[in-house]
Amino acid sequence: MKLTSILSLLAATSLAAAQCNKIQIFTAVGFGETYPGVQRSITTAVCKGVSSCGVANIQYPSVKTSNDYNGCKAVEQGIAYGRTAITDYAAKCPEAKIVVMGWSMGASVVGDMLAGGGGPGKGAMAGCTQSTTPPMDPTTAPGNHIVTVALYGSPRHTANQKFNVGTGSGTDGVMAREPDNLAALQAWGDRLQDYCARGDVACNAGNDNGAHSSYFSNSYASVPANWIRSKLGL
Image (tube, rainbow, N blue to C red; front, side):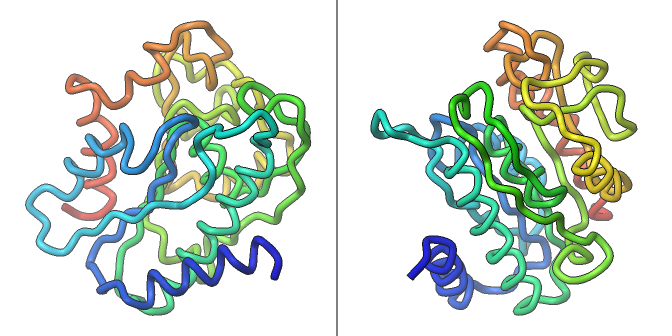
């Protein structure tokens, strides 16, 4: 059985037993961390006071466990798992409002799931080539069940987009999107924010690791959380 088929089966199995929430958040963790990771500060704030709000992990190999680790394959696995998990959840729980977010490599997973991905890897994905994957249509299922998308410190960050937020908005990331993928991502612009701080090692091609994790601090996490809540009508 192909790996993508195994991932799809695992996603379907776990979601089949899950309850339907009014709000369901899917998160993809960053490179080197395990679920729930740093985005927990934002998901907790989003779900505060909501009686039916769940959080699920978009599973992929986010931690390097051997010297033959392949970041491109890891992202491909995350795209496959995320697409299946969200498709299955939207079919099972059609009234649910779905939120999708990702940090660092996880932002590449989420962004490429929506906009399509592929090409030579850089940064944590250096030395490999990511297979081409198709975009998700925001106007048909499961895309039309996704109410909001937030990306933090994405290597795929592309300068000067209307959905960019933060002091690094005007600079490309280490793997800025190609025109076709960027056009597909722009179709999500009414429900997407792409957060990037100046100096961020991934989205701003800088050298500040602190900037790369700044989105989840006590002083900043409320910014994306409040925006997400506003899109959810909370």
